[in-house]
Every structure is written in structure tokens, then in C-alpha cells.
Length: 278
Image (cartoon, rainbow, N blue to C red):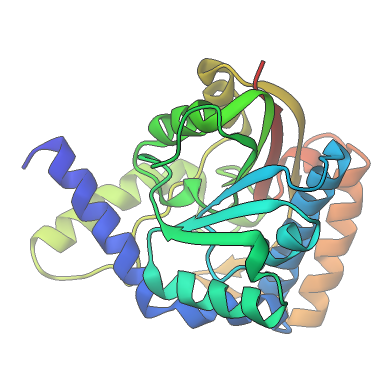
């Protein structure tokens, strides 16, 4: 099997996964769980970075991996001309419904597209956003270079990545970062023997240093970065804390991270990054 076929198979697996659970990604932003709260904080952090740019109305914005549209709608509401793309038609249908309900369809164009092979012309967008996308890319370098290509000189990107060294990973042997390569090898062996099958595609996690190196190699200049989200904390993939307690722990740790407390500031679940193309 060639490398290209392996990549194609992984992408098909990812698309099938999101096709089958598309409504989860619509509903999670309004759920009463710690994970939902962190997703909402991630969205707020991204939109805060957008607002700091003070882009004029009608600025061209690409949202790659728009999902069910939880960020697409507020972007369109800010008066931008948004191209919202995803590789999964079911996600785009949910996004279109949310856009129509908000009365913002005139500001948004939706289409099936892949961040690693975008169909847009070079230097076309003032801002490119990829939230929750890099966790599902086998080739993040290719996605980063495509973001660079379609961003105009002086334009910006905002992306998020799942932090490999998130604090919530350290208490569960099934999640601990140092054991991840061994767990993947065991999983691959069990799959080859038809003993076990994954419930979802492999999710890629990256260190802050790795993501910063990717943007530097692509030619972007980092303007701002932060981590957010502390929890849920688990043992053998089972929650250790009831939701109200977990939320209090998250808020305490997030407050420390926002104050740049050593170690804690770099150990949130999600890394959110703003960068500029020279």
C-alpha cells in the first residue's frame, strides 16, 4: 500500500466518523458538560483573536473545517464574506441550516473542500481559520502550506491544535503522552489480527513547540498563542470528577494559565494560535 493510499484511507475514515456523528458537533456547544464548556471557551478565544485584528466589513475569510457552523455564524455576523468549507457534506448541511436560521446566508458560501488541497486561488483571503482541524491531519505540513498559499501578504491565520502535553493527559495511563507510541503500536497489531477495532480515527496531538515550528517553517510569524481547557480528568477513560467539581478545577487552572503561571500556562488541552503572513 502506497503512502498516498494510506492517507486517502485515513481521510475516508475521518469523513465517515464525522458523517456518522455530525449532530454531536452541533449539539456539543449547548451541552451542560465540562467538555462543552471548553469548546465554548475555544470558540470565544478564536473570536477574540478575530476581533483584535479589526478587519473591515466584507473582508474575505476562509473557515476550513467549519463543522456545523458554530464559528461560521458569528464570523458572518461581523460582516465578513465567509467561505465555509468541510470535507463532510453532513456537517455542511448543519452549517447551512444554522446560517439560514441566523439570516446570514448572503454572507456565506459553503462547499466541500480539503485544507490540504484547497480549490481557492492564491493570496485570496484576509484571514484563514482552522479550528479543530489539525487533530485529524496525517500531513499537517501540507495543510499549513495551503493556508499560507491562500492567505494574502499581511493577512492572518488562526488555528487550534490538541496539546500533546495537556495536563489532563497525565493522570490516565490510557492517555499519558509518553506511552502513546507504544499504545498505537499495540492498537495496530490488534487491528491486523482482527481482535479489536477503533471506535474513532486516530487523533493527532502536537506540542506547542511543534506547532510553532510548523508555522515558522511555512513562513508565518506568530503574534499570539495560548492554551485553554483543563479536563476532563480521567482514569482508564472514566471521569474522576463530577461535572460541577471538574468545572471548578478547570476555572481555577485556567485563571492561572491566563496569568502566565509557569507550566500551567502551557498545559491546557487546546493550543490557540494567531499568526501573520509577511
